[in-house]
Image (cartoon, rainbow, N blue to C red; front, top):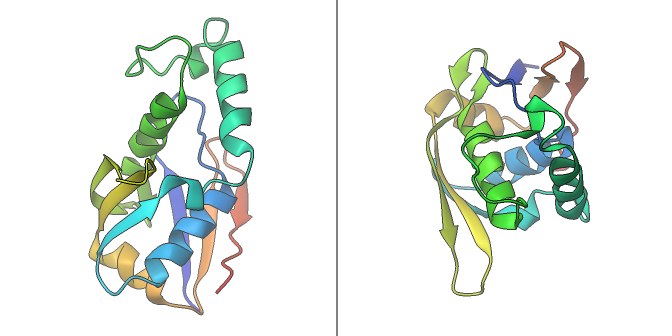
Length: 151
């Protein structure tokens, strides 16, 4: 069994990507026949988590530097801003110290949803395809959690 280590690098901001969201993302990529994948954001964020994150970020935005997200100018932060935070953080995701994605864009759909249009780097794509793989997520504070992928 291969073991892969995932980490969001280089940010002092509060990381909003949960292990559950990463697990869902890996599952979606595993089901994709190509490295280019479009995923509805609400399909990877646990129910109720978006509203929770918006409350936490907006409550702490001006009292704690980690919640400022300098690339988000709107106040209060809305879903659109939250999705941009998610996109930014995923663009800083590494697998074994190599970037997981070549490109990530936010796209509005005709149904009114927002999708992440991503092109996976080859090592990450093939790791996601390995249904026997073990993924370990390293939090910014160094804690680790093994991801549960529901195939």
